[in-house]
Image 1 (cartoon, rainbow, N blue to C red):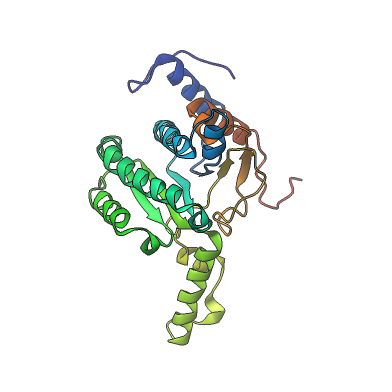
Image 2 (tube, rainbow, N blue to C red):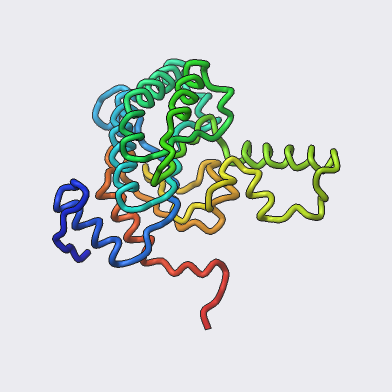
Length: 259
């Protein structure tokens, strides 16, 4: 990657150079979605408890979120807790919920100062009341003038999202509010929890697994995928830059053929 020399917005010169290079060499994805995998394995490989990996993973969330906002990514969606994660040991689930509360409270001011709007999608009512409260409090203080939307997928699954949309459309059709024949891709997409967002351009998965794990199943139909062996706690802004550089080399045809 060619590295020019400017320093901007208080970013260290070397990092500003990498960001300027990325912006110069191609389009920055408008919407980045990330399956943050490998926290537990990262901790185990170091002889530590799994929860240690989750705490270290928060540092990656902070760094990647900041870098995305600086680059001009408009939407960042993080798979923070899936519906399947409820099947983990209760002690680990409790630790994750406590970490979620602590992190949102600690980072709230930083998000506001950096004009990052926080949202959450998923079966939020399934979360402990303390988690719901802190999410509502934080979102009530979201900045009116924002440059990026950070979305946490919590108690989320792609199948849950699709079923929720289907049920809503079925109720509207039953009540005569919509014509079933009028339901198309665009209308269905608007009923999903990400209905106000564009579909992800880039889907990143850390941890070396080769699956999408029930994440944004409808929305990632044409997302470019970037899979890395790096565990999430080791994935920071430099690894994000590599993922975006890879994305910029893709030929996004959306089923078309160049003649």
